[in-house]
Length: 366
Image (cartoon, rainbow, N blue to C red):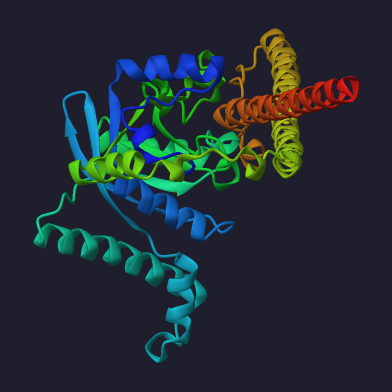
């Protein structure tokens, strides 16, 4: 953590105008109180394994409008379970698909076993969400949204705690998110019809929930004694601060490029789907017009009229129907990455301006 826990206690996380609005909406739904030890465990797990993304289970209680996160434990990597099973003599005859199913079973068994062990030693073992390594620009992914909806069906105030190791230098590197009420209302009904997502905006998918860090009394006593008894430990040395944002700017530009490419591919799928649908509709109109002319001729001859044919959508089923939710998510990702690039550029320009004035003032004094 970049700031002492004493300064982070009872702190609400807000960032930027858009995030402030999102946090204000989240404040109506309550806040999250995280034990500092649980937060440190989750952050250490994510940072030690970076750049490999990891995740884990959040445990705690739902008390009124407050969600208490009191403990957590990491999930094992599924690929590690898969590799262990593939080396096991008892599972060498299994196919790849059977090994994957076996790995999923072992993953679920691990969660159940950890929950039972925590219950035996009288520690909160109620699942209230999960944490994971996450770039904040990619927070509104389809997978995160689907998992949040599943969690919130069981626990209304369930959260996803995201940790971004790339932004951990002098910045707030963790945020809590929850699916918005607007998203929950249309989520299940919109799976069959992409047009139901048209009423949603990119900023209305997830709600950022305010976070409060809770320290134990012993930790507060230690920090107070450490601060006041050792004043030399609190001397600020600004020369050692890492203010270089070049690597973050490069990564965010890379994220913008990937997001735009993914959005372009999604739009191409949607255009191709619309083109095929237009072809089928036009073909059906031609058949209807031909059948109408045949029926007019049959009516003149006194023959029975033929029924009108129904449109055949079998060829359209070969093309996957594009999800409107994915397009909204990708558009918001592009906007978030662009905002990060603008913020980093502004910081660098401000730093260059300060350095320029500092050197110009020094040269004039000479």
